[in-house]
Image (cartoon, rainbow over all chains, first blue to last red; front, side, top):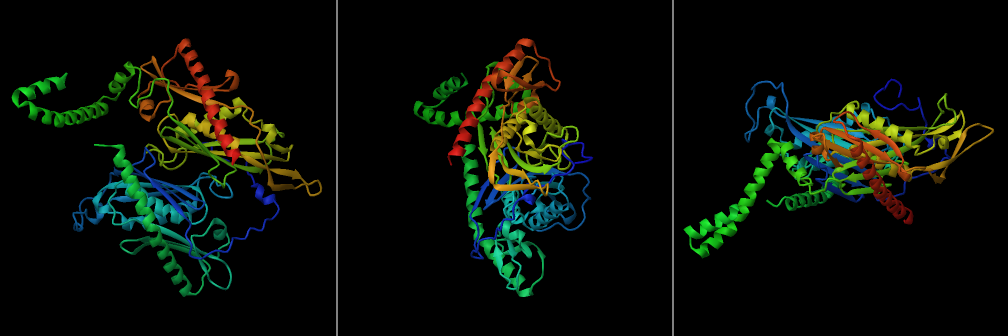
Length: 272
Length: 312
């Protein structure tokens, strides 16, 4: 990259070979609109992070690590009544700092490591969805750092990152009200608005609209919602949200099992 | 010794039967107390703690001074990349993904392609790294990998040229560290080698009439890997003792580090010694011979992995 002297210099610009290849007609296969791809989740695999989780759903691979809580200077003094349950007043509550990174080889086209606007938007979405679930009042003047790394994008990357981040927070032993489960949806272009749950990369590329829902399954409360694309009738969006919430509930038992296994592994490793 | 004294005391003050019962309860408690003391000693005086182990010619994790951690290689896991590999060296994990693109060859070498390595140390691998532009350690690692590629001639850049002066391949090698527990350079070199062996490039022909490239994604060829550079890292303790494959803690306590990159036929590709305590010629010779044995180990591992992939 011109001007980026911290990295090894490559050519000024380059094109992917797919541009010159014969046009392949890759239509996504027809499928049951509410099918969820099988999920593989594992917590507690990084040695240097306080808590970590790896989630694989179809072709999407996400790794998430949590570090902290770390003391942060510059908090305001006192102020406001204390929250219920011995929590710090609102001004002293802890902060959650989220970072979303896409590996350069994660998508069809190579992306320069220096992300850009989209990664920041997704990091903000992560933070907004995780905040309701974490008891930040129990970590006054502290900062929790959550970093998500997308190794391969096979569709509904943000949903997978949300789920992995919540698992990593639970694995780190951070006090939470509930886990956060994410689910992605997309709608193909055309007059008949059929929403597809857990889209693959091909379906997402051809979509006219996309939606990511984050749910706290036990409390049955929506933690986050991010949607964009061509409008349709309001009923179709409502239908999509309902489908997403159902999908999240179906995913929950897998994540519970994953955390139980991780706790067992940790218990077996330190017999004290 | 302490335990015998304790038992005798117990037998004297209490009946023999009761002493036996108490003994089985006291011993594990003593062991726990000893463990706690060791952990405390490790926090307060880490260097002394290590010296005690090094005197017995071993390390806290049970390894010998010349022993490597378990190495595992997994290739072809990322399907969006043209070639990928994940290498785990004990706890240290590095993933390498290679993407191939077209570019115009450099004006001063119109028959050569590009190989662009990039090592990324994100905050998720260790709490000492911050998000943002690459820090010093990442830049050093990137430059080291670029040197290894250049010096060992692992790929002939001329092989990457499609049409001299007009079109060449550029291989973007992105190495991301997932877990930082020391010895990052070894893991990166190994991951790069494994990923390059896994890369498949589609066939490209230049259409004479339109002068445009035509890519056939169905026909793919492996790269021609000419050499297999393997890196071996050492840490120097107290200016005298050399240990192989340092963990994160050992790197922190070391007074110097050394990385040797060996080729087949015992050819030295690259030697990386960023300051630190000096080494005598004899010690350096020991390092080189250890590097040769390590090369054989890694070559065997790679061959097994490639064979198992091709068999699928």
